[in-house]
Length: 147
Image 1 (tube, rainbow, N blue to C red):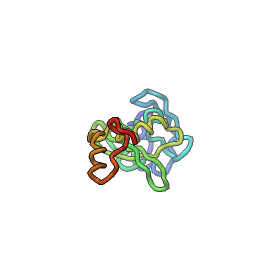
Image 2 (image 1 turned 120 degrees about the vertical axis):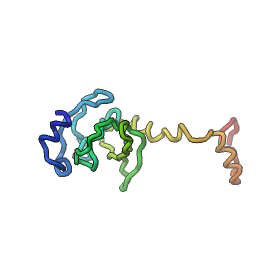
Image 3 (image 1 turned 90 degrees about the horizontal axis):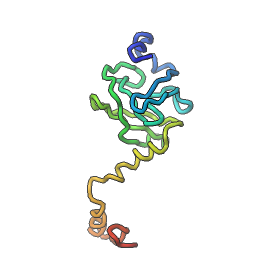
Image 4 (image 1 turned 135 degrees about the vertical axis):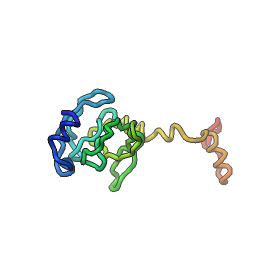
């Protein structure tokens, strides 16, 4: 069932109060996605590649006309230490956050979480200089020196 049919079938806000049991094919990795087995009533991203679609303006309203692919760009820890994926729409740039589901790909989640550490906005050698400037020992094992 495509997005246009859902709009015709269900009244506005239907998914805010009802569990979503739809199965769909991911537009990015083409895997079949089933309803979430744990951790919520709504499956709003692919558990394999963590991509989503921009279909909501507010969670569950299905009111967005964009329909663009939402790429996972980061993770954050919500209250009660629950992880959420941060998505950015390829088409319009909107940012949104979706709870991590119990069957989400743990390697993909960790690679997204670690990406800022692997691509810092400065050369790693600069850390040693900054440590020395702050009165540290400067022996972090970077640049050939050992602790």
